[in-house]
Length: 223
Ligand code: 6PG
Image (cartoon, rainbow, N blue to C red; front, side, top):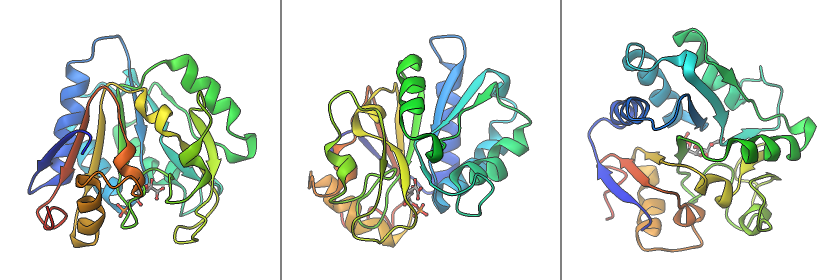
């Protein structure tokens, strides 16, 4: 398994602590963070908005996304909207937000991420099918060309809605810290596959300078 597995009672609270710790120990001015989608992410961002309010100077934070559904940014399924509701509208304003815009194609985001160099934090979730970001099993993005950091992608098995834009594994790897959160029994099988280095579970292929898995006991039940 790539990274450190940490089983906790409170995944959202532990996530908020790890992010505020990373911010406090940042090695460069500013702080760049790529956000995830999903219900776990929503819970994590609501906690971060509360607990990070005093320890994270959001005026120094550049907010990116690790993936996005190709829907309008105000669509109920948009990861941008999720982050606005759960975090950004609660903390006031970030230094910059960089939403993924499918209508522009992946190249502008590719250039932006390339210019950034490294994310301070990339937050990812884990799907029951073993996906992370929008890197779905058997999808084209799993075999993105070397140098591609951002691509458009779909779920060929149609288990996840909407066309997507996503960081590739290479894009994710350009980070000082990746935090992957997973809660609940529905993630137990996928997490067991990751722990067994089953590469058919895309999340098994996540690497970066440091990878931390924050999971609860139900998600870890098969380990
Ligand atoms: C997305 C997410 C996706 C998510 C997982 C877990 O756009 O849907 O980026 O990768 O993190 O599917 O989602 P849940 O926390 O809702 O199970």
